[in-house]
Image (tube, rainbow, N blue to C red; front, side):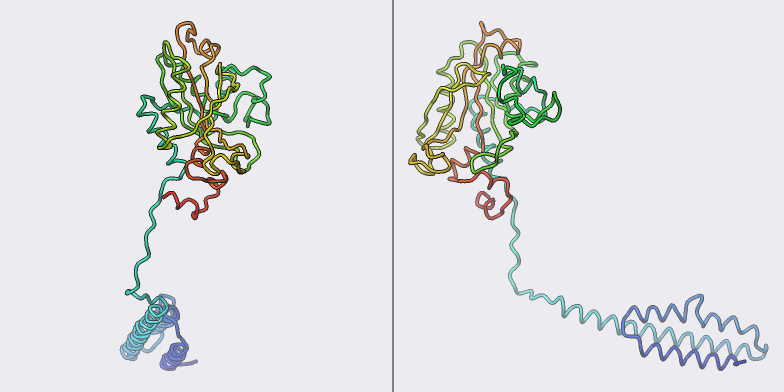
Length: 343
C-alpha cells in the first residue's frame, strides 16, 4: 500500500499536470474547487493522518499544509493572470473610438392624427365648446335607436357595423355621445366629442375600418340653420388658415333634418380631379344638419322650445387635406419615414 508521502507526491504531480492544461479562468476555479474543496484530495490526506505513526504526524501535517498553500498560490496567481488576459482580449473586441461623435437621441413625437385632433379640439374650445368623451363599445340604442335610425336602416346591417353581440357593437360614429349627453344634461348644450369609430368597409386609399371623428352638438333656444353655416365656416377658416372653397350639398342623415354635406375643394389636384377626390375635385369633410325633433324627444328635450345642430367630421380626411397625403393607409402602417415628417 502506498505511503502518505507517495500519495502527496502523486497529488502534486497530478495537480501540476492539470494546471498546465488549464487555459480559461473557469478552468482554474474548477481546479481550486477540485483539489482544495471540502471533498477534495487535500482534505482526504488530512483524514489519513490518523492512520500514520504518532511520531510522524507533525511532519506529515506540515507537508500537507505546505502543499495546500502551494496549490492555493498556484491557483490564485494563474486565475489572476488569466482574468487579466481575458479582460485585455475583451477590451480589444469592445474597443470604442471615444473621439467619434455621439449618436443622436431621437425624441418621440405625437402621431399626425393626434396632432390634427388636438388642433381641431383647440379651435372648437376657443369657440366655446366643451369636450365630452364616449365609449367605443356601446349599445345598439345609443348608436342607432336613440339617433332616429329606423330598424331597417342600412347602417344597422352587419355589412357596415361590427357587432359584438345582438345588443353591443363598436360605435360607427361619435354621435352616440349625443344620446349620453342628453340623458344627463339639460340645454343649453354645446359640446364636441372626439374619438375613434369603426366601420366594416373595404380598406382603400380613402377609407379604413377604423378612423377618428369629431362630433359637434349644440342645443339651445332659437338656434338656426344660419348658426350652423357660420360655425362651419369659422372652424374651416381657422383650421386651414386661408381662404377655403366650400360647397354645401343637401344630404340625408336620420338624426338631422335638414341634413347637408360640406365639401372642400381638393388641394391635391386643386379641383382638377384625382384618385383622392375620386376625380370630382372635392373632398367631403363634414356631415351636418339641424337636430331631428325625434332625437330631441328621445333625449327628453322639448323640440317646440329648443333646437340645435350637429355635425361629424373625419380627422384622417382633414389631415390628408392639410398635408396633401394621398393614401389614408399611411396613418396605420407605422412607417417612421412617413411619421417623422410630422415630428
